Length: 232
Ligand SMILES: [Zn+2]
Image (cartoon, rainbow, N blue to C red; front, side, top):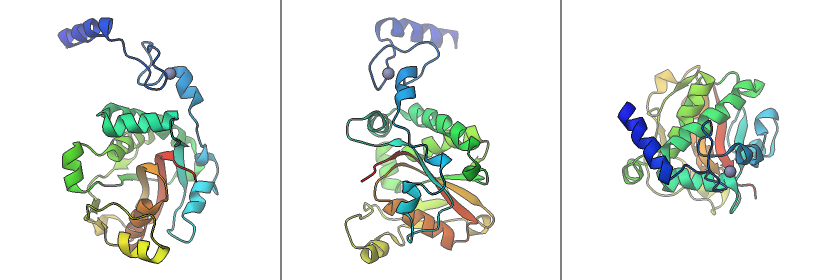
């Protein structure tokens, strides 16, 4: 272990760790994002307001207990940078880091008190193989750890590799997403208050499909949390 640390220190002499958002060098206590950029993140604070605009996205589409996102996702902003690093640049630890950070906030919110199991939006097995990891599951692990609740990555599976259609009409979209997600352990779902997590919410079609599958299979409640929300 000592040798590993020594090597890390040696490497950091030439390649100091920098903030993913601003490029400034990170201090000893900082990881991935500097304190200033963390403070300046375009947060939504949806977890403090029951009837927020994200929850309204699901009105008439899926039964949702609470909906929240860490920040607003916009082209070129810090949340987009972080999601991009997590998804495409193999920054796996960043996922759990963001989850732990947001989990601390959710833990303080009355709206999320009853959540007892984190379930990430699953990737199809082919995609999981290609990417090597599920970015939403990493975020979910961090949240579960901070909130001191369970996490289950096998309960919900994705059967289709096709992208969730978003431009179709509500009816054809419903037909399209219905059946993509399947609940594997229905007997363990009863009385479960689920916290469904995703990386970015845009139209909400994917989460709608997941939430409907979980509700239909008998979940006690479904709440939602994501890293980014791309408001229209
Ligand atoms: Zn920074």
